[in-house]
Image 1 (cartoon, rainbow, N blue to C red):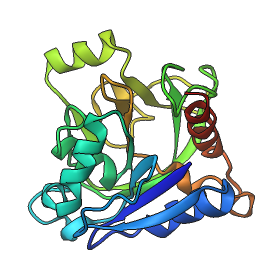
Image 2 (cartoon, one colour):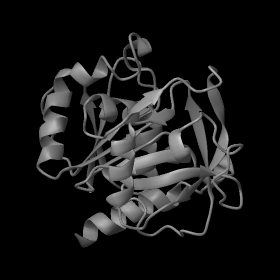
Image 3 (cartoon, rainbow, N blue to C red):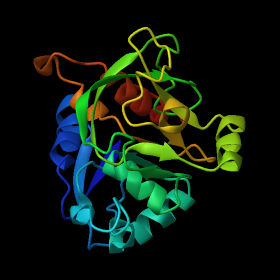
Length: 231
């Protein structure tokens, strides 16, 4: 798989993503500058975390208008794989590639800690190999991570099996105390109806290396790579 990591002004997790795909999983990995229009023939576009354009106005709202996003939107429309983590998730929602919005955390503070998330479905490329009975410990680092949508959109997410992860405790229970930002129904990650665009607030790329004493994020990447090769 050839992966393209988009770099916006203010991206700070791009190198984490490059290290994950290139060094840990052996993928050909290229950087895609936000002002370019060439996706360089990649199979997957990855939108990393960070503070694109300083999070001025609203997280992801300015990055959505970066030149390369026109090509990313067209790529996704043709079935190309797109994944956004943290700020990348915010950009996907601002671009309407994913439904809903990411609002300020309910405690009005920046949350940076390990949390647990539980897969809700195996019906996606990034969850296909994950256990639905296990809680995975994945770091979060965001100030605007509270997922919100209207009731009609929420009903659609449920009916179409688009909710990928929910925040949980270590036993996999989706409790109020395990929700780090006040997200509606503890939602931590979703996909689009076409199941080729994925967004999540936690950072699996920060939980793949045994030297960091956490490898729970590896399963997401392994699922993605295995499933995409089988398509």
